[in-house]
Length: 421
Image 1 (cartoon, one colour):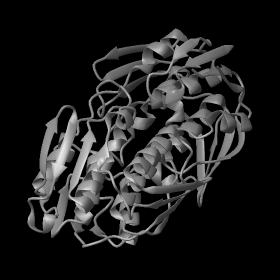
Image 2 (image 1 turned 90 degrees about the vertical axis):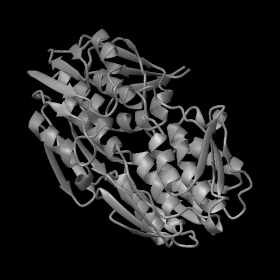
Image 3 (image 1 turned 90 degrees about the horizontal axis):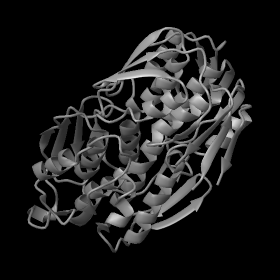
């Protein structure tokens, strides 16, 4: 199993290009199931979760062709409407095939999902939303079995549905399902994330009638069919944010290409509060820092507030900043597993419920640590970049799920990172 070996102490300088967003690409790939003609995508990152999704779609009968960051998907001859446990267990986003399968083919059998161990991410909101649209759904032997064969014209029916919790994948699943439903669907308390907006923009190009994406009320007027289109996946704001924190922590200067500042307002505000200089022009963001950072309080919340996917990275920043910071996690109940690994490196962190108190220390020491989830992995890389001596990070397969060519990009900026067996 691969590991990362990091020798800390190097300031990061230079420029890198941010990849297309994993969290946008996954629902967009699943949306290919809605189209009767081929879909052409670009800026699709080379990541394990992307590979898993493409393999799943291929098993269903979607014709998949990939050339670099470009992917073609032809779902004109889908033959299987099942996502098995073996395919779904490593990636919770596989649930995103449920809505499209049900909307276009009237039937779906999807395993209850797996993924990172960062807390419960229940799919009951997906199920209740589809039931509100008339679907018959039963959960047996770990599988969601859904059907619309009893409905008029065997089509989902438009409905008004209020989501008790803001859910990104739930919003995406129901929006895709509603695109081919009969009548109008109104999704209330919808997620406002840029990835939801990117999916909506592509669906509209495919022929869907969607308004309100990016607000908490999305209205979808169903159409009879959707066709393929061409689409460029939005840039990965979390990857960009991670490298921005790396620049700030190491006292470097890094220019990020294909990065949109308008998607990172909360992150940029906190970096500036910590003492970094952040400027942007067009699709370029530059971060400059002298490495002398101030502790910043963080409270995660749904977009446009501070993203939970950047919590661990700012935890790493606070470990070497001057002062004391509170980091409060409101999205996932088990997303502090990186804390004990940072403590192995000398971090001063205490936890009380969903809040961590971080007291900055003069330095971290390299150590052998273990990644527990995707963003925890990234935070340990950041800690390793500023730690004294060598840091070895085990179980980095988590990193490969969400960061394209991470060691290459860091080394291009002057870091000393090596992948070892």
